[in-house]
Image 1: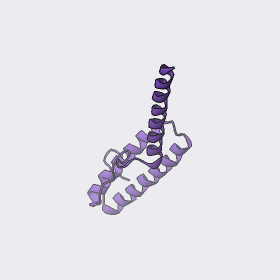
Image 2: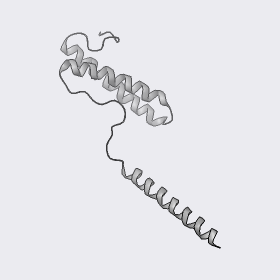
Image 3: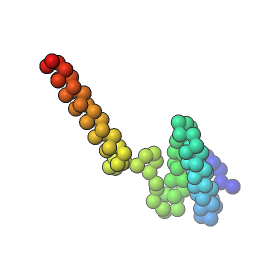
Image 4: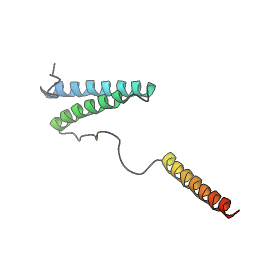
Amino acid sequence: MPDHDEPGSGTEPERRAELARIERQLSESVEAALRYPNSRRFAIHQDELQARANVIRSQLGEPERPLGPVGGRPGRWQRALLLASLAAAVLVVVWLVASSML
């Protein structure tokens, strides 16, 4: 069994088995995190698992997967929230200006 301090030590089949085991643990951790969304320990555990898996992937010549949230364009709900916030701010400013003119 490969040592957990040195992920991926051993033959290629052993490394692939270790990678599969880590990916199973990662899936289980994600499922558990969905049940407890405010627990930060799952995110830390998932990052540790992903880092160990990336070491094995690099040894196998496979591309690594990024740690943490993936950047890029904001989601629809984020854009909608931004627009709603801006609209609310404009309404507050208009209301303040209108109430000061009375």
